[in-house]
Image (cartoon, rainbow, N blue to C red; front, side, top):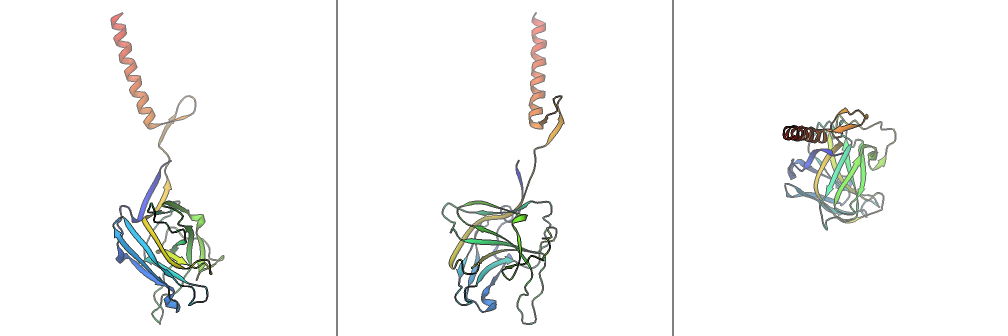
Length: 227
């Protein structure tokens, strides 16, 4: 079955750097830094340096969508992160994040924390990484939040990319090259009424059958005229 794709970033919706915002652990006194650099409309680079020493083993560096989105992905099955190649995968663990709620900045001007839904993936090699909705786990400030309920797919307000230490697992420079981020769903081939044997035919095959039947009738008429 083919996939139907809805591009969120990249693909037929060109990457633009002004639609992304930096959110690093420097807001909490850390020293990590991240960037989203647009190389071409179909090529973006999420890169930077993850520092975990300043915060005693913790740390994060992230980029997220600007403002508040109004995405309805309820008809889709998950998200594809398409990694560029052939030598642009660093083998590190990343997370794609989604949010149902985005709060205004607090009195101190800092972004207020809300529940994030994270799906982890490792950039082992170029290609498509499929993240199904079941792969997304609710987290709050990096820790799983089991009482968060369910992700509201009809009301996605933010999309993000995150590099974090996963509590001391990784640190240092990181670089992820991307074609696109898109939602996907399987679309079955269209079928027509079942044949006498109860098996449905593909419409493309039916068209061929009608053409063959018409050709057979033409040959039969010709032969009858010659006999």
